[in-house]
Length: 277
Image (cartoon, rainbow, N blue to C red; front, side, top):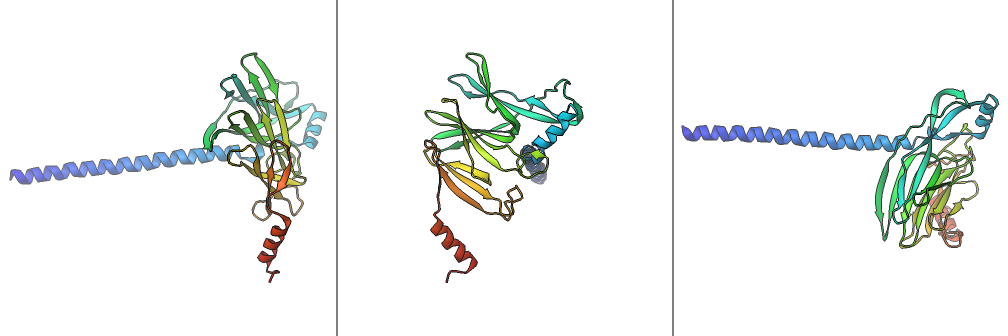
């Protein structure tokens, strides 16, 4: 009789423990799923092309009325160079619910996010947002310096740390090539590289093409850059049905060279379309 009671007791304990384990697993899955969804939404919100700056044509119309529809917003400083106490301050912007007098007060709000990624012997940091400029702040001498002297839009700041140098990289839209009234990531972009040590800003572009992606070559400051070809000439690169080409950028000389030669490219195209027998 006692043995039966012990068995029943053990079965109840096991049932309770099993139930608790199942609940714990479900809670963990929901928690991980919630975090993943929130991160996805966060990233997508930064990638929203509608966060661009207004086109020059739209700005001119607003200026005639002494109005504005966007205001400057500064994000929290990011420590880039710990040895020299150098910070970057991303300059963002907010879209107003309605246009206001250009002499009105600016509303300042702050948001920030960052991620870390290791890569060969250097390491990287990335900052996502909706930016229209970048301020370099030197804590030691309390000096600030804005990077761009013109109207631009970008949503990502890459900081690459080498043994002898720190580089900041941005894919920047400068013109409303898509003609939708907004300068944003739908428009053609150039790649800018800023050397924190040399205080030098370099621009990489390929006429009538969009910068799609870039990647440092292993143990090098040279880059592989993917350019999007706007075949239908609408001022916007469509990844779904428009091709890309890749080039190598020499950091020292500033020259772009083809990775794949014209002969190989022609042979591959003919094989694809079946014209080479």
